[in-house]
Image: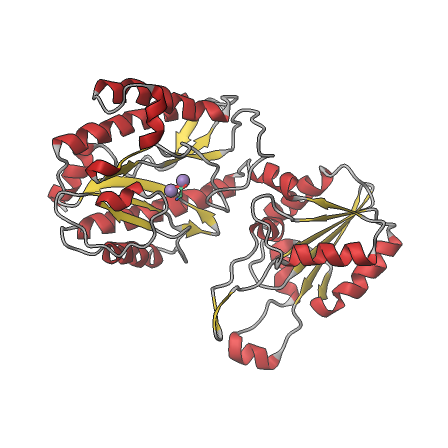
Length: 416
Ligand code: GLY
Ligand code: MN
Ligand code: MN
């Protein structure tokens, strides 16, 4: 993977228009939970994409001076006592091997190096990952932007997020392999849920079946908080309480994923608590499934991203009118209130291009297709979600092995 990370840096940094630029990326640190407890550390995904290292506090510094790129990775100094309490921190050779960065220094040398390199290279622009969704002023990159403004007022501070987001859209073969593994593990987790599903079980018990199975199969963690929603809970898009009893006759919506090498799966399935769809459940389910089929089959290079949702809306307009659920198109939003696709990768809602632009799908992109239908008055929420790779000629459904027709799901329950 060293070449992959090296190449990522090359692509991103070469694409920056400015010469005499510095690029600073921070690995981040574990977030405080309560008292002396912290949430598990999650590396900043852009830092990971550029270095391959998943340890806290590290700093990447790249200097772009014309064609020349000079790189330094700052790691923690070895601390014997810390090693005894918390484990070893990454050592020089390991950091070099993973990232391919030859020049390794210690974090306590960072500001002296910064000052030296800023001056020596007459730096005019500083690139930091300032994101474009959440403004968390406690993040190191924001704090560092303030420090740079204070100490180097002549330097232009820019956000590197969009350049990184652009390259992260196009998955390399090793990224696709990781995603396939994450999806294969997710399949095992879903099947373990199905093996244990029965009326009167608690939602969190089935969530535990997923967690157990994915960890047994090599996934360190879930990609996002598992949604395991029965009955009307399934009409809440991001229901993560998972603490209700599942009743006989209800549908269960699961939206979950395993991770592998920090790459995510994002899969939704909907199935009956008792293993058999009612006529009404089957009617609605098949409308969603058919909508998903139409959207997936339309996927090919150059298709505008926004067309995906339009295809689903056109399908819903026709089918929901037919069953008398709606009278006209404007009523669809009462029963379907999200988009049908998002990019998928190192983040579940993966970074992408500038918001607002839509240059069409391209080979190497991975997107979800996740139509839903939520009828609160009937206590029914349905979502079916697969992960799709855009190819040169069309698409590959990476999660096609996770069954989803009414017949296949009912057969699974009969034969489990
Ligand atoms: N699990 C969140 C989503 O499907 O977008
Ligand atoms: Mn999902
Ligand atoms: Mn999704």
